Image (tube, rainbow, N blue to C red; front, side, top):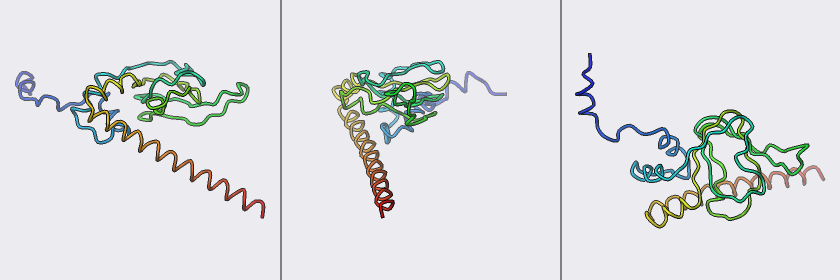
Length: 173
């Protein structure tokens, strides 16, 4: 039988990581962060809960920040034609979206809807600006990781466009 008093006294402080820190650690925007750096980010993020089919943000809304799915699902949808929405992506636990809003003031290019009961972490532009001011090294890490994510998506988009052009060219021949 373990003695809980002694177990608690000798437990190393900070060994256990919160659910938020565990989720953030696996998001490319926070890749390579130390436990201390993750704790600083964890202090300023927000938690949101959504029911099924609840709007997280609408196409055309101001972009305020990014979201990370702790648990649940999110659909990213183009609602320009409400009778025939186009589903761009279906996201689940650990996925993130809306990250361009951290560096760009543009309006949202799609709508985000919860697929079921969904728990999210939200990280907004004012919090990023606060980190940049208070902890420049952490802020720079976030910005560099964001740049890598955006560059990776741009490369993938270029590959899709090249493949589509090649297919169109082959069909003409």
